[in-house]
Image 1 (spheres, rainbow, N blue to C red):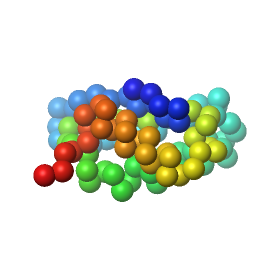
Image 2: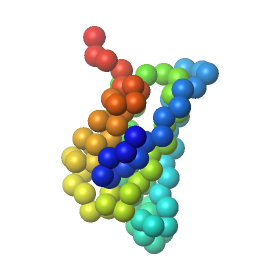
Image 3: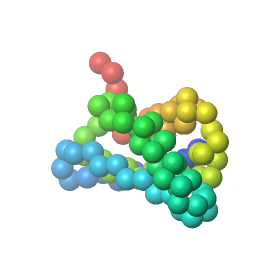
Image 4: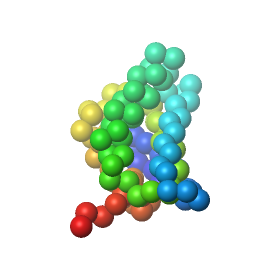
Length: 92
């Protein structure tokens, strides 16, 4: 699934753990910019981990626009992708 800032690859897992990976290609920029993109994505998804369903593997792939986007927009798009793929735990 894709949004303007991120692409999400989702796969179910055999165990109940949630694994999250981050991918930032050289297309995004030099090493400083790539590391900044990974830090932003990590900071964005960390508060959401408690609300994810167990048994899923996620890979967030950054697009070049992730560097200049406002952080609330990055959070909104990440949450939308997680809900779309079914990894988001419904609140009871």
